[in-house]
Length: 337
Length: 289
Image (cartoon, rainbow over all chains, first blue to last red; front, side, top):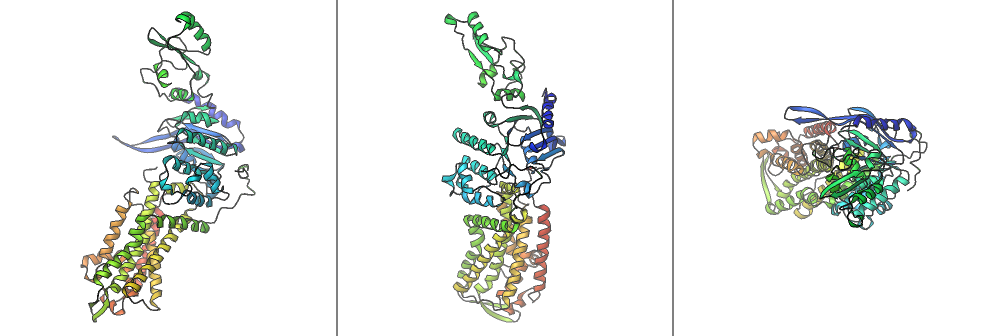
């Protein structure tokens, strides 16, 4: 990735700016390698390679990145499930690798894949889990909050995929955690369930919890997150508020039209002016421009640009944020919208 | 939700609430484990009911009249069901402790139950107390049901006074060593799906070579040698000393009940299982980092 090194500087700047008491998660130079068996014997492959993170208390912090970018490895190190090879990690003021029960009572974990549910009912599972914590939430209220009240007496084996996921969330929040890890929490949700889940998560944040979220859904990160980082190849390639990620150029609107059957496009900060000019120059009767679209890049577009996905090698270089000259074809942008 | 626990500054926790005690949580876990066991049909049939069913079948087929056993001291007549009972009690203890533990932990490791628990403040001790509580309750009820069945349906005479003490320590040692060996063995199956396929044959083979179904002395020599290495043979022998007339000691390999050896072998397996279990227990799957 070009620009990976330069993008890390602002992250470190953030770390120094805040007071320690406002820090929920602080990570510097995190590194984790795995043994990988290939044709030429075993080699060590870095899943996380010099990663820096800073999460403030009371914010929803989203970690984005393609599959295999190191998201889950990073999160599982923060949760205390995995050892690290190098780096400083502090979660709620403690090192997760050495933290004990009191620390675990203050975190909540919703793991990515869980298929461990069985013969107990929803109410029994949530009720028993509540007992592990010093100051748990009221199980019935927690079940209500995730929308499972009418299934409370159902055995967890009989729940649908979306209901199981909501139970996972209930089990993650019943201990009233200060810090909640959500690893791809809404996979398999229908749009309505996803929307009510988002309301639940923002409610938890408004009550003072810190939330660290990984997700594949960019609109989820855009809606929920106060700040996001994009991780690729085990390191942070960009960070910031969802609407400023990738810098101002990345959000430059794209005007696109058909010129004699060929699609042409133009990146400009003044799309109205461009359209007016196009209407005068190439517009048909009444100034109509054939196939006109104006696209403001979404977080998803910016994200795909950052990780170099969403386009083929042939399209690489065409229509990047930096390119503002008229006439470069940008079919990929059209196809994505 | 209130925020009373969230606003505190790390390191300064004057009112940090106490964590629940490990013993109390052991009870919470025992209830969870019991509910899971009782509601799972496979466990109830193949672990809880299996020795009861075998007892009913064998005693019905062979139990019509007293069998004459030609033992060293001369022929002795006892009810077949009485001869069969100690083997079934030993089998029940082995199933409820070893098989239950080995399969359930292997499945829970594979499906992520253990990983989920690891993320909570539940102590490992409480998790195992829950397992032990479940195993203990199931095997006590199972053994009581077996003895009641043998006594009520098949007129097996109950042992007298002192023999119940022998029963108590053989049962306790057998259950304990079976349970810890189950914890140790739970790392052998490579997945939750293969767990019963890996564990069940071990138990079944041990049943055949340990004199549970066939009188131990009538087994081939080499088979006896192999069986002597494993706890089920000694557990069954201990149970025979509880439920069979003393004349039957003559049938045993050495002509005695060998209580000291029974206790020693079971205790050695208890220690071995504990050491291996503690060293090999893991919360996550092998392929999960």
